[in-house]
Image (tube, rainbow, N blue to C red; front, side, top):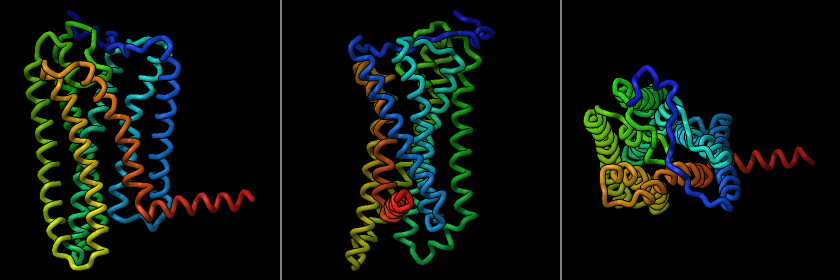
Amino acid sequence: MYPNESVLSLVLTLHSLELPETSIYPAFIFGLTTYLFILICNLTIVITICLNRNLHKPMYILLLNLPINDTIGATSLFPQLLYSMWSQDRSISYPACLLQGFFVHLNGGASYLILTAMAYDRYIAICCPLRYGAIMTTNNLVKIITGMWLFNFIVIIVVFSLLTPYRICQTHMTDLVCYKTALTKLLCDGTEVNNIFGLSCLIVYHVLSLSVVAFTYIHILITCVTNKQSDAKNKALQTCGTHLVVFLLMEFHTLFPTLSHRSEFIPAFLRRVFSISNFIFPPLVNPLVYGFKTKEIRQKILTCFKNKKIRSF
């Protein structure tokens, strides 16, 4: 048992990566390359939207939050993971673990809220095109973005604040990342309170997101079916279909490791694999799906590269 006064100097041990000695350096190089690629792709989208006034529209401003959030998520995992690969040291201080956990969960919650806001934006654009300019004003856009980040920040602060009053009985983590569920298992008592509140927050996020996404996409589908303009219909269905696939994949990647902590039938190895993949695939896929695949953003990036190429000559 560790008293509350000593938690600042407490050192935890994350679950072993279980890498063979011959795979350590290839895994490190692969991880570093993946992290750099994620940063380059997401920061390219951020810079492109910020520097081009033509992209300062509600759709792209909402989209801007996604690469920023993906960068936060990847950065909350990769530096610590790469260091532990290189040094073969899985220890992490308790404050550092809390900090990692905070940003990990901030990233997860923000992903839901951003995709929900983007679904609402598409709903207004497709189902109420004549009212789009009046609804998605700059003032309302600022309210949406500020509101979702503030709500997410407060919820995650409260979630992790519930850990601090209770004593810690063990220092070995059951996961590769400092998830709230893994941190809760370290406590001597208070696990029931933390589990109930954590599960309640999970339900709120999922029910809120699923309700908005289901409502918006049912109405979008109805509008597309009744729309006689085939080009507009195909464009809307393609955009929204991609968005829906990404949302459902994120649902699976988030729910599986979370619920597996509460089940004895799911292998721990499988849970750990999915807990890591959640910080790899979304930050890699989102820039390709929402950024480079979007015609306006792709054209701006290509124009920028062409201009640089011409100047170099």
